[in-house]
Amino acid sequence: MTDDATTAAGATGTLGYEQARDELIEVVRRLEAGGTTLEESLALWERGEELAKVCRHWLEGARARLDAALAGPADARENDGTAADNG
Image (cartoon, rainbow, N blue to C red; front, side):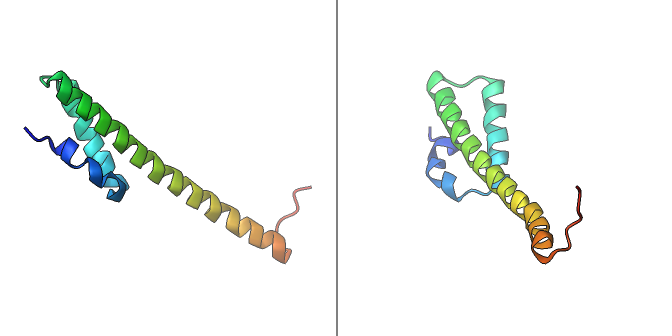
């Protein structure tokens, strides 16, 4: 039996955050439900680890973009002399 989780393993790098998150939720659901062989459980676990890495990558990228966006306006105000003096 070919498992969608193992056949899709090569496509991990092309997944968006929501796709990876949704698939990870399904992997966890299947693992928690039980009824799979040891081999199937290991394949699901490995797929879950790959999906978690994809999600972490997207979240780290989003955090970096937010940090840059939040830092950007403050840097611009400091450079043009309009930043409030807190001292």
